[in-house]
Length: 203
Image (cartoon, rainbow, N blue to C red; front, side):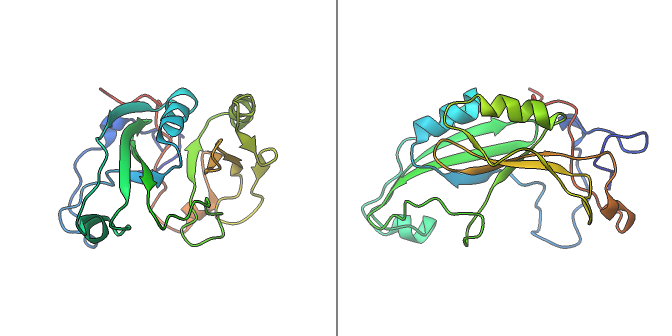
């Protein structure tokens, strides 16, 4: 497996470097890649605008509202049978597809989970200059930064600089910037993916 950090011995990835690999010895048969990650948001229009205008995503498509008069929503999506869903798919950077859902449901829990809650989550953005990235986000309406960039001083990712921030609707996200080599690399041949050579995907 190739290294994940930019150095003389570890090339930077581009989207075109993701060539066909041999089938894994474990895992899902015929799987080739993670296709997308999905998040449920309270307002799909607001979330799409934020992902496109602030985070740099490209909107690929939106689907017509999904609903059913039978038990299909429960059986297929594990939600209330009378729930409805509006969906948008976005391309976020060179390797990530993001699917956004806005649900309505009679039994909907509208509290955004914290990181400590079951189902807690966040999405992290690798940046080359975390201070510049933090300054940019600080100027965006409704964004809340949880302090200033912090540095991991020891352990497997010592040297990592990171900062959590919240979107206008409270979704947790992170900025992360890593040194060219990390301590964990001395213990395994496996590597984290990235950084990529550029944000924009190949078209």
